[in-house]
Image (cartoon, rainbow, N blue to C red; front, side, top):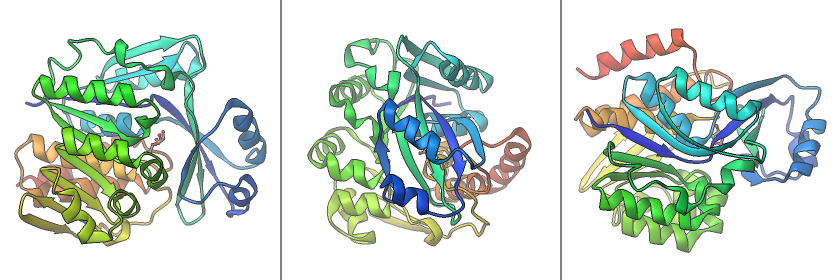
Amino acid sequence: MSKVIGMGNALVDILTRLQDDTILSELKYPKGSMQLVNIEEVANVLLATRDFPRNQASGGSAANTIHGLANLGVETGFFGKVGRDEWGAFFRSDLEKRSIKPYLLESDNESGRAFALISPDSERTFATFLGAAVELAHHEIPDSLFDDYSILHIEGYLVQNRDLIRHALQLAKSKGLKVSLDLASFNVVEDNLDFLHEMVEKYVDILFANEEEAKAFTGLAEEEALHKISEFCDLTVLKLGKKGSVIKHHDEIVKIAPIQVESLDTTGAGDLYASGFLFGMIHGLSIQQCGRIGSLLAGKVIEVIGPKMDDATWNMIKEEVAALMN
Ligand SMILES: OC[C@H]1O[C@H](O)[C@H](O)[C@@H]1O
């Protein structure tokens, strides 16, 4: 069976449930966005949210996708960088628990953390301190890293390190891997448009984007954006949140209905959609089935706080996935 390796920011998520959106206005964070913050701003976020309930989970967009695949039984690996601290140890042990091969480099700097501020309507806004994650450098990618794998999944959040992305994608393609990219966040796309266009046009086979990201990437809305992106990629997946998703594979267009659930926290929804979709692809399923499995996983993860689900939930998911495979 195909094996999948992920590369991304190795982060621990600190998830805080807000009572309303006042704190977002006070901190000047656009709702639903991701902003990079320094260690001083981390102190501000912690102070501003000190009275609200907090959870911790291992995170990072690509790592979340890899966790989802691993939970479904796919052989996986993850390449990233953490600090020699409690968060780095937590991130590593979570990979190991799921039998994900950890290619984790270590730094003397603190591990990265993503502060997810969850609004009552379940939208999440990120203040991300990259810490050690941002130090991952192109020359640290071992030449043999991709040798055992057939798909490389990476996240748009890595754009702060363009040499790293370029080198990884070139190496992956030279070894015959398919490249899957999740655009990550509309403001990441807006701020790195030319670079992302170059990478997508040259190297990306499978692209995941939500409506806002696709619009930022193409200047077009919904299906027009889908058509534009699919000029460059074999497979384009446009995630439309409550409206479901639409996928273009060469000339085939497939619409996937959303799953009706009570959403608590949208953190990881797109990442888990990618897990389900890639799982379906690896098993040679139809585009319709791949999309349905993606949608199922996205629907399940938004019913919990954070991007990780417990074993009991995964057992239920696996039964539903098995049914969707027939
Ligand atoms: O896509 C969601 C993930 O992105 C951020 O990087 C957080 O770590 C979170 O888990």
